[in-house]
Image 1 (cartoon, rainbow, N blue to C red):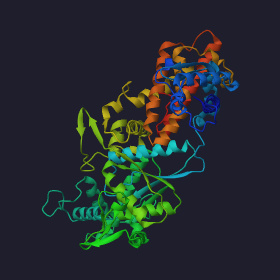
Image 2 (cartoon, one colour):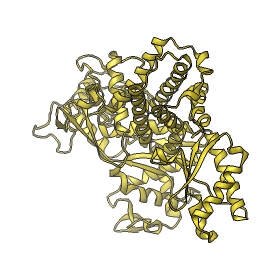
Image 3 (cartoon, rainbow, N blue to C red):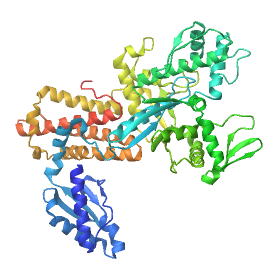
Image 4 (cartoon, one colour):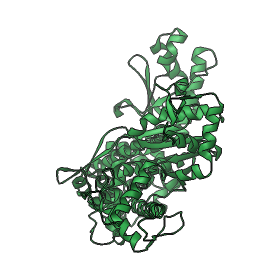
Length: 579
């Protein structure tokens, strides 16, 4: 329901509880949408919550609450009927005026409808993708990108000031392996040759990097300085710097194709050059939460709930990978981000306890449970009824760019960014599909389904509803002034009532998605709203002789199209007016 109606009912229930109990009520009133629409518009189980502590029969208490509710003048124009069901549930049917008020709200607020200022002034940092610059972004990174960008957008709808950050793991063994792979290619070796390292990266992109390095080409990441290939195959550091810059630039193209922008790129290597890693280690040592054993430095992470202590510095030298993560999160906290959300694959589950333990051991004022994590499972790609496991370009996995191109019908012999319509179609499908399930569930991406124009394709189903409405509006030559004064009380058909209920729940869906860090709720909602529209379209005529009824139905359709577009925008998906 609309926020103002919810607030009125909550206050009315609080007053009713105080009167029924004969004592001040200091609990929480929970209002829910009944699973069965025939039970009404709002359900409340307050009587059942209060019955035991009040030592009263729940149905008798429910009757007392209902009596006070009916006597409250604030409910006069809001509530049409109140019923008691089962052991004490209270079901409320809103008045026709209250149910249709949502249309006027949408027409007035437009893109702002459903948004809240509940967290105005609060700031959150969301870190996602954070890929090693050792190859193109794979479909797992794509799921992170879709989840992270949608999560950032939905939190903005609740007033959050959102800061999006990409953490580049540009230090460590994998970067050394990358440089070694490029050096071998530059020296003329290829996978399968004698002398080709077993751990080397085998994708065609390694050969491309080597060729550009030898040719003396210049590459530049979005936030970095240009790096020129020296052509010297024995200059390992030069090869490393060029390869990292090359792949960061490639990942920039992946992100551009996906329509994802970041506020900041943070380099792991800077934690070492700026002394932040050494400082973090010193703080953990000074806290007395570390010890030396077998030539290694250990963190007493069991003191903070971990299942075993963890090595910080290996006996042969060098820090384990969670140590720079601790330094990085201290940096986040010191930059003023009291709330931080990390979106990572489920393979990072083991790092959560040790990073949090390290932050507590560092004793810099960071609260327990910092940061928050959203872990996602990987994606299986199906094409032509077969699982696609590798990409020739990447050598061992399907890339984000592959998925976008396949899903949009992009001609891969031509520059991808020169095909905006196909690129948008592919991006829309990939974004919608990858947020359409809970992050912690397995997901099968069916390329053939993404390309299809059928009701089974969820993004097409939603976009087609939006386009169909605009086709109707264009044919009718809608007068916005007339819609503002439409007699919405004429919207009484069952399919119209279903649309009104769906529209009114949009704000609740946004709030729930933000609170639970779960943008899949929005994808589910959009499919339900689109389904309610298609049902209406098949059941009722818009072009009726009754001018007032036609105007009311056109106003309803404008509201539906507006909310469809709003929800798609939160997911980063376009809302075409023609298809």
